[in-house]
Image (cartoon, rainbow over all chains, first blue to last red; front, side):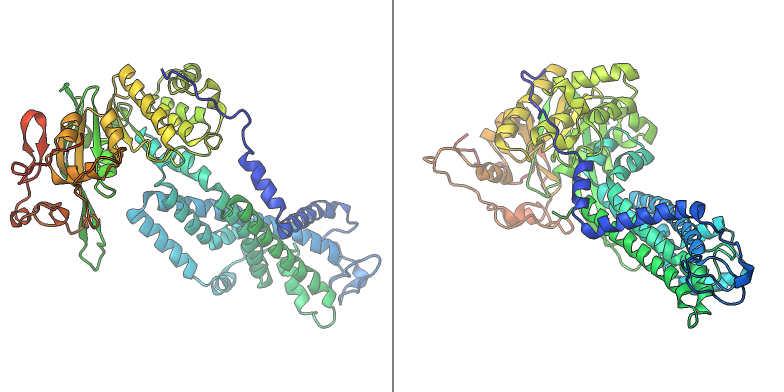
Length: 292
Length: 330
């Protein structure tokens, strides 16, 4: 036995979580973005219950041409006599849900591919990274136009397609994290104790890569929302009458000169949401991976 | 010498580099034909410059790096030939302590989790016993039992190194590779950790392969010393013999490079010039000849065999008989 016991600090220093929160709060654009996204989330969840209209309810008196903004219809009505604000909020629900779900799929897929690639290296890495390169080199929009000529995806399938088109960035990032972390001595120590490959990957390496993965997942939400909007705008997304920001923009585009109030709100919401998500990602990056 | 616990025979680690579909690669010889033994309860020091292959040797013995050829035997088991399942069981017999106490502990696992994982992986004790055992281990390395609930960032470098030692001890090993365990620590903390290792060695009868470059630490702790240069053994012998009577110019140069805390001592020293040659393209014959003040033409022609002198002192130098390298101050 050692003769003496070494005293250890009585008070643990500030925990990792607390430091992250403190640094995040100093990043003003990220904080504002988070507030905006929370507000948006609340509105799209609560909105459809509060609204006196349903997203596909028509006022037959107003069919034929877009109606102007009024006390009854704050953002006007579309050419089928439906309330634009209700459709905008409901569309936000769909767009955000597809964006989140697509980003989750992309993050899982990217993390798995990147982890296996970076951990096992060698030919496994070669095969997976060439696959990633191939996926990256496919131009998204032409592919989507081609697919849209063939079929109309159901919402779950659309989410899967969105996820599968944006996982590559995460995979590359996670791979580089795993390659760096697998050489660290604590991983070698676990290997010296006989820990299995999956155990090293998921118990030792992954928890130490969670910061960059979170940032990447956040940014993926932005990409997924953009992609869903683009797909819906091109007609290969969620199909009317179910609204999304993308297909609202699509149907409003033919009335752009006479009724610009229909196109501007979904356009702005896509812009601000994606912007906010990216600011949030930046803020998280600065908070979780300080370069000091 | 005690009964050998670890026997290393002709161990080689070669890395192919730059090899691709279109290009013939070259071979980096990190370790070339290294043989030695470590007796039960013995502490063997391993010295050499950075890049001499010390760390690779420590890793290869534990099969954390796959040896290209050669054999490592621990007790009655052949480490180099074991299939993965048996290797895992053998890992409880051989452990490692790392140099950098900041990199060697998982920052996301509490000390208790880190030690508990070692116990769990080798099915030592029941879930309930383990907490008890974790506390005992912490006390054994001089930390309070309450340290188990803490995370690595709450400890100092020396304390972390104690945790690293506790992790190595958790599975009751017989043999531990200590890879420069004090090089990253303050001098005052170094002494504490060295004393701890010394105590543990006495109490537990551990065998150690102690890698280091502080020669005074090696002399204090080790029974025998191996001198490595460019992946080859230059000289080995008991610490006392090697320090008083080095027979290889490289050993002498290493001893001369260590500061002597007495300004009145005048020494004629062998000073090493230049860097280690590239292990991709090592010099012919004796690898040390390019930096050796005593090199003659013959040195370039034959690889000097590791000759046994008196009492287990071995040296790889064709001129060892004619040179007088005895250390004037030892």
